[in-house]
Length: 172
Image (cartoon, rainbow, N blue to C red; front, side, top):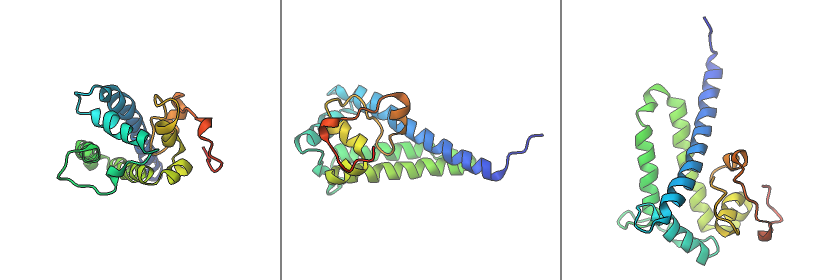
């Protein structure tokens, strides 16, 4: 009988959770937030018609992130509702795969932290989330679907570097 070491099992759960979360981020951003979000009558329209429009006007800054209010239904509260929905959908997995599910939850929190910070501090975003900065301010917003880490964009060939945005401190 094949025995899998506990350390290997933990590491596999962690890596699979990161890969799964990154793939989910890429898929949701490309096919739901942009795909379905282009339709003005879709629930997902908040992403394209509110968030992207605001960022285009304000050079990446989205002032809606300054003060979150759960009493209004705007791009930021919808984003939080979607993240909460994703967390709730994954809750049953926690019993069987706690580290995997915990990694997904940590990834959701990290996504929100980085996305919010990027749109409150565009200079930080240009330096630390260059792929997301390029997504909003580059010449082609049909790429750079990842927010937290650019791994899937590189793997799937959707990382589009925008050299005209010239960042001397970019590590990407």
